[in-house]
Image (cartoon, rainbow, N blue to C red; front, side, top):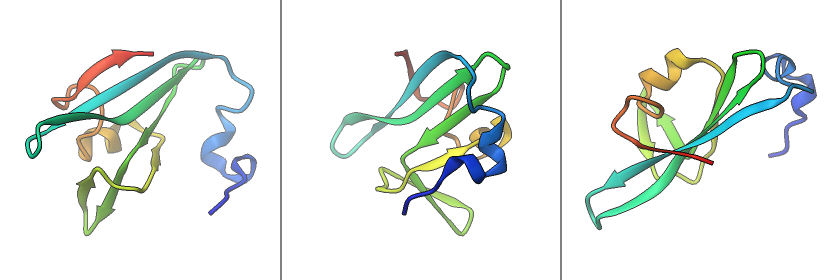
Length: 94
């Protein structure tokens, strides 16, 4: 599905702003023992960030390694769904 981000309120605060950092967060899974880039955070000059994550949320629970991409606009939801900094994910700066 294509979405025109210019008409979604959550995107408006980011349009035209300078990106100050891009970070990726890698998750380890046990079977087989692999790592994959689950989440990317993009920080902007207005001190706000967005997180793009490869997961699916069903009934309030996350399914990792999903073919869905979810965009989060607030750190509270990132923490709630265990997808960003401080959530046992390996971090790397891009």
